Image (cartoon, rainbow, N blue to C red; front, side, top):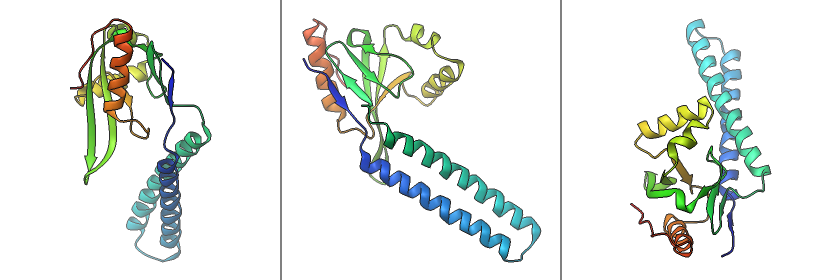
Length: 183
């Protein structure tokens, strides 16, 4: 069985980069306009603080997207033994370690903006104990939001949840393991 590699959809990354750049230019120009036009002192400071916050968010988005655009390595690797998602804080997850899988799609205005496969693992607590304190807090937040501790992110990838599950179950069958239905 060959290894499947999936890289992020570059069109969506470019769209996010352009939107972040637009926000940065727009709110910087707005802040400069507020400084040039005389007005009440209290509202000017509030507007400037708001514009600075939006600009910081836009710079963070630009930096993250540019880094992702420069990174040519695949985000998701599926092979005969395991799944490797570079967005997960853990190393390879062997197919045999997966107890169950639950698909989650978040929609806004009918458009899917988040597509996740939540994995329940045999050695989940051991893997969580090996994470940094910050990553453990993220796992706790995932659970608080009703998600699994480890989620394979398919959002910007050219693979559907059904195709991922089919490949996983095919790999599990070759290893003599029972298939796992997508919940």
